[in-house]
Picture 1 (tube, helix red, strand yellow):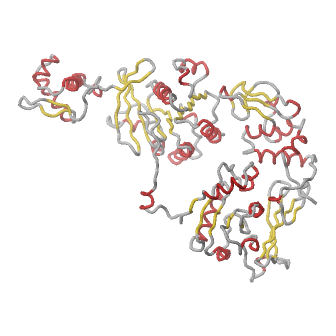
Picture 2 (cartoon, rainbow, N blue to C red):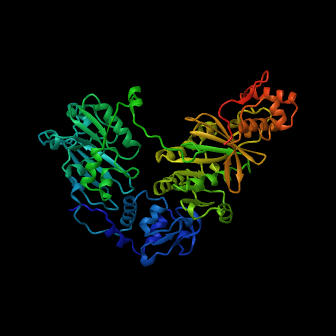
Picture 3 (cartoon, rainbow, N blue to C red):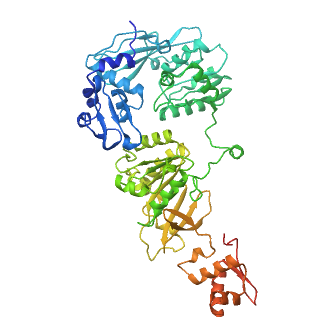
Length: 595
């Protein structure tokens, strides 16, 4: 009897007219399926989604809050709602549900690369069994592994020897690599995968392929000798078990195989394997391109210093002259101008590159007022508003990954971080570290710089006046994880920007707001304006006219010479000027000439 296989063409007709029931049984509430505008089960919002079920195919449409319409049938809705991670999973979920209801499809020929030694068709009331035979170099059967797919969706594996004994009951039994008789005497690389299904797929493509019994991470040491002086490529599944299995195989074969490389397939869905990848319209030619780019796998013991320093790494450019590259916390007091500053930064970056702006504290009317000053030349900015962005831990990871993949932004603004970071599963420092790391990991994966807007607390008598960074609100974890920290202070109509980071020295810049744009103050005395105005004027004078004696300064600025002497000493004490004794000219320290 031929094995069954699911396809869109044979499952879709069976699902026609049943989509409301199917979707409700997979967790989409009935109020989303009422053929009227309302919140979206995938991305939230208001009045953006409608399920119209045209011709009984589960059709729907979502405006995504103005960022572009998406639409599809019931299969696609399971993905959009975050229930199915990919089209293959969606198809499987619907087919299995219909099977349980007795709505079965007709059998047809299974593609060659998925054939088994022996298989039984799936039945809703009986397990499905698939057998794989491990053979020695002569082709004689040495082990039979049976995969049992249970009706509840779980699976188990059974092992038996040809004589009916279990392997553990035969002290002479030794495990062998799968399909050993098909590749042991053939030249070329051996491809190690996780599971017999994947090995069969590659064997059908005329590639040397194998796996081990007992599943991921269970590689037996007695298999190693079969790979002596052979070139090996490991193709891990895209999950934690797959990576552990890859490391286990590499450790076992490190001093046995001639070389060990790892091929992590491009665009492999989460928990996917090479069969999923091939089923996604990838060809043998595509696979060979991936295999040719497989990377040599190290010993897992860390970088050698000489190898680390020899790496040719191109550091990304900062997204803006006032924003360092990487993930940056931008903190300031309420109404200090944090959002205004971010809007200006975004407007400038958008002139040359895409910007993702998560204005998740703004309603639509507020956003219109805030961004109205921008024009068509800022069309690279994509904005998401209040209620449109799921929190991390509640779908935010998938949402952010999709945005970064689709837009490729040069900069992401999160205003504010408190409304986006996941609620910490643990209290205190450790919980905050995990919450911030979850965001940073995604930004780092796409090499995207981000501004995460946050608040500072009220000043205290115990604060260090020279360390504004200690006033950032909350746990110190908020400043431990990001690459950079910026504190924005408002002072007499000016904005003072304190910046420090892992790869930049601490600096202080002073800005003035002109309309909706910030301009840096270039005059020598800008830093002291509003704090020590007379000293600021002296610095400005020296920056404009160059070195001058104390007498000249007094005459030019209308000051008493004795006071000028006192001010010059104060400026010299903080390293801003030098000279001034015995009629020697006072001059600026460093390049503070006014531009």
